[in-house]
Length: 527
Ligand SMILES: NC(=O)C1=CN([C@@H]2O[C@H](COP(=O)(O)OP(=O)(O)OC[C@H]3O[C@@H](n4cnc5c(N)ncnc54)[C@H](O)[C@@H]3O)[C@@H](O)[C@H]2O)C=CC1
Ligand SMILES: O=C(O)CCC(=O)C(=O)O
Image 1 (spheres, rainbow, N blue to C red):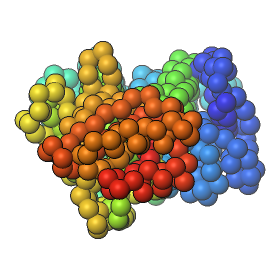
Image 2: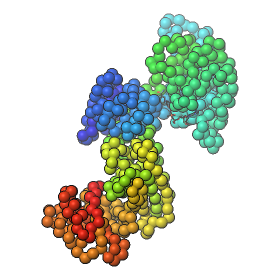
Image 3: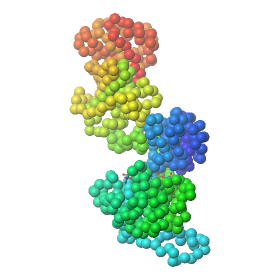
Image 4: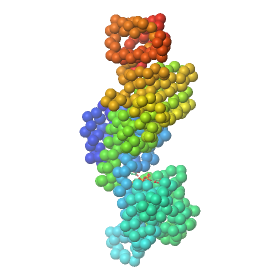
């Protein structure tokens, strides 16, 4: 039974699938203090938050069983992503569910600041019929500058075009083709500052975007420009904005987000030119339901070991790539785990070669599964798909991945070589249509073994009677042999035996077999 802790208010309908899941226990504790969160998090497999809960390095360290943190929304600035990656905790967000709501809110804010709607509303509700103080401006034929043309920026651009605005957009990933397709003009931040009547930002808050609009930028702007920030506080320098409003450079600003939330003694709030909302961009019934549904579904997949797509600390895998790779995930992990068990010495290098139908797909996610398989043998539960590359890196293990045309007649072939301080060993596996995964090569020996359960890998001299002697030792000790495969280099030379047995074999029995004169080594492997 997986235990999931929810610490922020989330749509009831959105989390229904968690409440209905037979393998999940959901505990809702909104408004948990940071100290209380630290004291309870150790019991949970998953933590589900919106934006209030701060998922700090301490919380992640205390969450000994934690496998996934889900954020019902886009921005993950309330989660320590580096600490999560180090702890092997997957961080999931819901990037699509609140796009339209936030774009609509941004547009509502743009219109509110163009027509002074909140200020006029306030005056009238206070009893004053004032038609002189609130003259606004039209949007038609005005220039809107958008900084950050991702999901939300794009939706804002579409709405602006419908209102007859000219759109200038800056985004490091914006291509000329895409700009043309959207009917926007590809611009620089400088162009936007100089030409726009309205400027709206839709980037995440990063080192690069912090104060991307500050005094220097305000100085370049047209007099009477209006500024909208429904992304993150800090993208626009609040102090510089305050001064630009006082000097009259900026005619108005609409802010949904603030450098400190909730704002404390923020002088912008209360200025008659400033329209504010308390971080409401995603606060619609639809967005909250969407993000809760998305993140709940993804959390279940992570917990159940199924493929998931919205991890913030893992590269995202497009659905068509995932479809092709998924059948190989277990094979990759088992090959890695197999090698780790038959190899002695400190690991220096892990080399993975993909052949056959694996050559034309991005195999990086598959490499993670191999690394997990190799490292988890010694590092245990601590290793997962998230932190496996990092754990290899901090141990100075070189990981190489290559594609090769040599598929040895298999439609797909995954070959893993482990180089340690003492030896270099190789194992290759494939997926046979209708038969599942198979190990088809160990070092130079061709073999055909299903990588599952308890296996005995016996290295011996190819002499008559060895197989019988091994069989009778196991049989007389009540160990049933399920399958047996043998392989040899030359007649009478080096040979291997691979037995799958129904239960683990004791260390004494392994020693007894190892003492047979023709036997060089006996290794028990659990897959
Ligand atoms: N007010 C609210 O309630 C909400 C706020 N947000 C905020 O909106 C932001 C944008 O959300 P989405 O559009 O879904 O994200 P997105 O990832 O689709 O778009 C962000 C865009 O910013 C661009 N960008 C990054 N650095 C940049 C730079 N230095 N200059 C210009 N562009 C840059 C990226 O290339 C990307 O295209 C989120 O990061 C989040 O902080 C999101 C949802 C709700
Ligand atoms: O309403 C919320 O949860 C905040 C939404 C938000 O800022 C985001 O998704 O990045």
